[in-house]
Length: 324
Image (tube, rainbow, N blue to C red; front, side):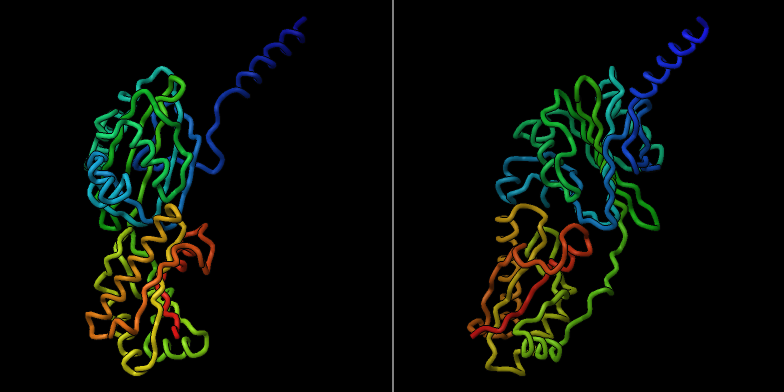
């Protein structure tokens, strides 16, 4: 009889233990954020280097029409560095507002400055679902990470200023099956290794174009998600002008290439606008426009995998191609 009772107790304990939710394998709380007590980690993603935009204003229909994106330079600020995405679920019976306020109190105590907060439909004049789509579709860490159309939602973005690099965090809390669902995104800003790609001078351009008919350039840099050329691109532009000055019969196709972040049509248009910006810059430097032709390739000709930031960095480039 005693043996039967012990077996029953053991069975009950095993069943209870087996049904307890467990954190996703390999995940860990971000120490400066933490988790709400009683919740379970159901997603953990990490990338050594990503470019993200941190929402600091509501998503508006006017900005979306102008930029073509929900999160854009009108309502957000750029951040680049080590990126982490964590999703938590539960505990049941807690309201999203209660959970969000706890997170806000915690990060304020750790020195974060709140940049933006919105609740429900106040997050966008296009409706509450716009925030969901922004986090679901426009994140560089991937989509499918939160559930759609929660009855209520609260969003917070914050910044921690540190000598070793600022930390940006966004915290989204929504309802899922009568329990809170929390999505935490963190960006630890830090300079990317910039000495990995060799500077190409006019002599190397001539050698590559003579041998291969093209040369890939990584020294022409653009503002994030834009076609505006950054000032630190000038040395490479000078070398292109020098090459063309020494080879007066040469005509070039200026081909813009992107990685696969975002949709195909969007990247195709972005690459074309970037190529056109390079052509305009060279014409402003005195190169005849008849010698240059802009062409957008988008993500269609990668030279590396788009699964890592190192590969995506190689795919984002400008190529000079010999033209007839």
